[in-house]
Image (cartoon, rainbow, N blue to C red; front, side):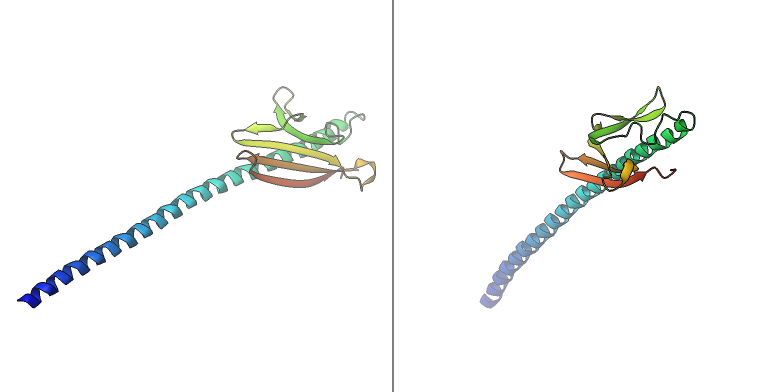
Length: 161
């Protein structure tokens, strides 16, 4: 009878240790799952913001091309208008905005902001091309206090000449 009691007490202690180990493993797994879920949510947010930033940068690049193309249309009626009117010279930390009165895009002297994004445009003449027939457009969109940014580059030219 005494042997059965010792075996029973030992078995109870072993079961308690097994339960504690199982609880420890379960807690570890849950912590890992919640950490992974939090990281996944953060990465999803960052991916969405990167996509928005790329779209904003492309919109600004398209706006500068639109200014050039509008100049070509105007130049057909007025010889004094050049392909690079409104984008002549070097611009640093400028922005673009749509003028609803003239129904045209225009360069503005400040970077433009939307929601958490700040959009900045730099325009410079290409020093390797005579007559400034080529310009380097750099669009930078930043967010998160400037800790994240996307930069696009494009060269536009007076290809009609």
